[in-house]
Image (cartoon, rainbow, N blue to C red; front, top):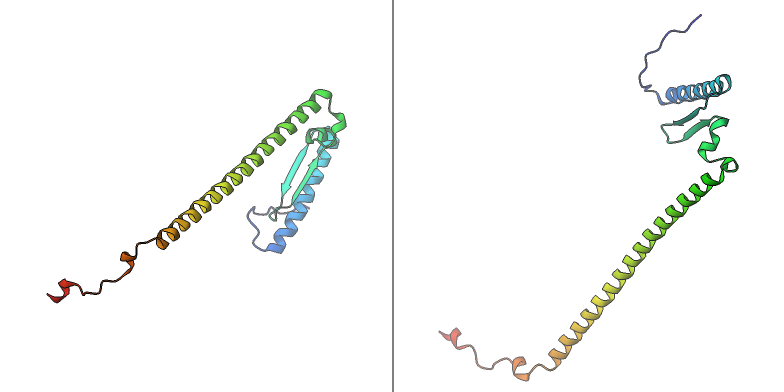
Length: 148
């Protein structure tokens, strides 16, 4: 006896959706394993859950493509991987050095600005202490314009 077809749409109930996801995920993983054995096919399967969790299946004949079986790589492939790793590390180091250099330049600029500010403050204090006495005294006579 066959089952009836269901309408393919989003399942609103979260617990039902999770149960369906789990069952269908297991079913598709089983089918991937079966097709690998029956047909000698190279199968790779990646499934991401709504939660972000990843499930994968890689047939044994394709694991070297994933990089897990490093012993099966020949010398040229290993050298290419090594070169790629060195290039990536060089780029990372360059970026870190650029950031550190920028931070160092910022620090020097802030210190320079503080020195200028301190020098300005000292100049103002020196000027105020040497200000002529005449500028500090208030005139004794009222302003003549106020009488008019």
